[in-house]
Length: 299
Image 1 (tube, rainbow, N blue to C red):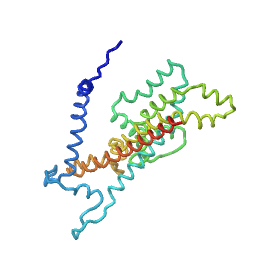
Image 2: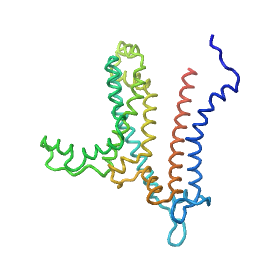
Image 3: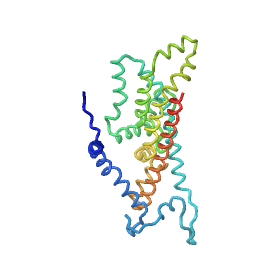
């Protein structure tokens, strides 16, 4: 029989390394960012330990010619564009990933392993290289234009770079594996006898998909949506390289404040707002999932 340690001290001692790692790599850095966000911008950039909420006010207001605070929606526009592109990216990734994940789940074990390996293969290449590849594909006289001209579909095509379409393409390509894997894991665990029972009861493919496959694979789709939506909120490479800096997202805005603008308090404030939005979203999803699980157990 395996002897279990029941003393509370053993549990605390065993978790101390994890607590230390979280403290040094997560809590302390976030605390520093919070302190910087409430500091004042220095005369030559950086920050001074003069605490105020001016950086958070700057997200919504600017000081006018008369010294009064005037509403400025420029940062809200960036936030709105970021949320829109992140949401559209998540939806496209889900629509493309589900049939791919379902196809992989139906294969025999050896083929399944090979296909999962192919899905994860892009992670073996640097993100910068993968994004630069789309510059070659979408640019003037690029791969896409040459293919369309060889098929006599177009005579000349303007560059597709430096716009929301190029940014969206890069975001979907970069993060779609993070959607495929959890959806595949959820579909693979499906009880196939339920599918057979649905067909035996004269359920069509659409009814089987809507009433059995989709509800049972919902946890994987939710996990994939979180894994895609959260990183795209802070994406930097795709807006910079494929968007050309014309359509700014929150990741670019934070980078610009810590870089060329040297307004560290404002950059930290934007980062804290972004982190708070993500935490609220995750908490709401967690509460929703807990309520659904409680209702299922009560039945």
